[in-house]
Length: 181
Image (cartoon, rainbow, N blue to C red; front, side):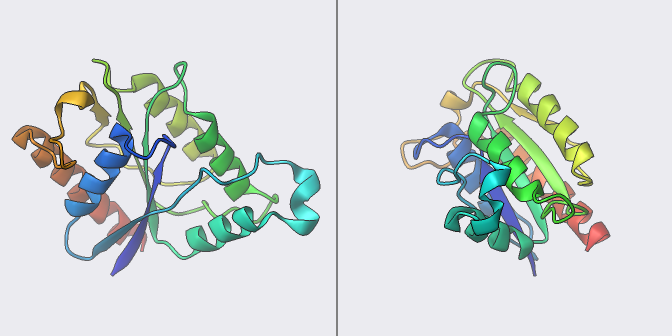
């Protein structure tokens, strides 16, 4: 069984991104176990704090060391990723030489109520993942637009084509994890 961390870039409890992450977890193939790893409590990265690292940093780093891959599910803020997600990348990549990211497979799913589905955030995040040495799922590309129309009042995906697409993302990611496992 491969444990997969889902990191949600939106901190809002009922966010479309969290709903999508939960749907992806439900659509994961046999052999992948998904868990959402919270990032909202991480203090901003400051190297001066490394001597006595904040408890939230230690918790996050320890949780992430115990996973076999990551799925980033994020909105787009100002054509980039939200600050909380960028901070999580920084906390996990430090101190230098002790990155929790290196070599772990990743997938990027961007979700937006708008039509372009977070295209800018998707590509901006991919640039960081290259530097962090994370083999990243190339296909299918996952830009989920008009997300406000995809879920019912219980948080379930109500559009069959979207459910099929989420299943295809997780199937492809499962193969990537197996290849690097």
